Image (cartoon, rainbow, N blue to C red; front, top):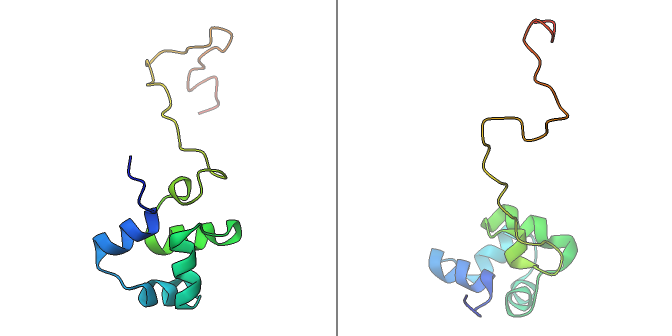
Amino acid sequence: MSTEPPLRLYREANGHSVASLARLVGVNRSTFLRWEERRVPAERVLDVERVTGVPRHELRPDLYPAPTLAPAASGENDNPAVESLTPEECGE
């Protein structure tokens, strides 16, 4: 796992300047640079995610836990208490 801030990794990998990303997010250059060096404020995480595609759990893992994978579907009902209905029973 990299200790490099995710916004810096994104910016450098995609050839963006601090100024261009700041403009897209709607803040000034120094504000964006501060977010890049420290952390994105909670109220701006979703804006930054939308503009950059950097997942919210990478921007603020303290607020957004990393997603977990759901278990693969077995094709059968895992809960025996729930019956499968036929299309006729569903009114279709």
